[in-house]
Length: 218
Image (cartoon, rainbow, N blue to C red; front, side, top):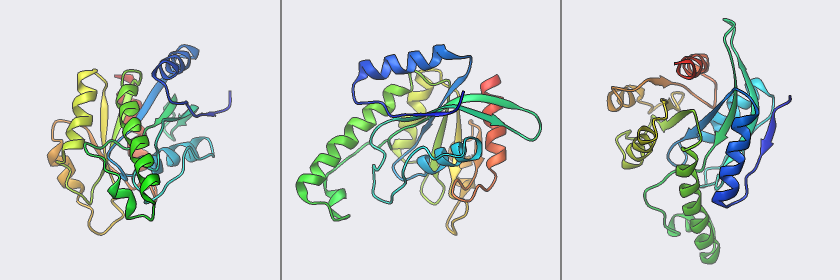
């Protein structure tokens, strides 16, 4: 079966039915991609889908909360040079934030009413992202390695995944940038598995794919 893009509509009942349907189809995993706003979640999801399907999953923008609802690519067959393989549904989620204000959108040229609408959509997206954790088998926490990794939102994401017993990999992203400090991410998440990559360029991406297969098999 070819990979397929799925764009869920808003609504918790629809979301639950969709995840249940996907999970029953095959013995495969649902891989959730989580992280703060603009950490590179969609860039990473696109990288994975392009590498194994040849199709992007979502659009990328410097405007915060550009991804405002969950997008899913089904049947992504992850195959590595060493013969390892895994079929997964890649779940790209909205950026998670502990504070959302319409004023942050005004800086990008939105009018006040547009900014208010975007802020409301962003808030709903955060709730949707957290709820989706109930359905994924493995998660990636994507962190911008040029920023302080000890922010509250990172602990919120990790804490929610732990509470649901979802195994996760911490992804120290953007190592291609001059101010990247992946070692800070490793120290902040010293008890977790951390893989440093550039989702944009693909640096070290093979190590991440191996890690996903290992965690899924454990």
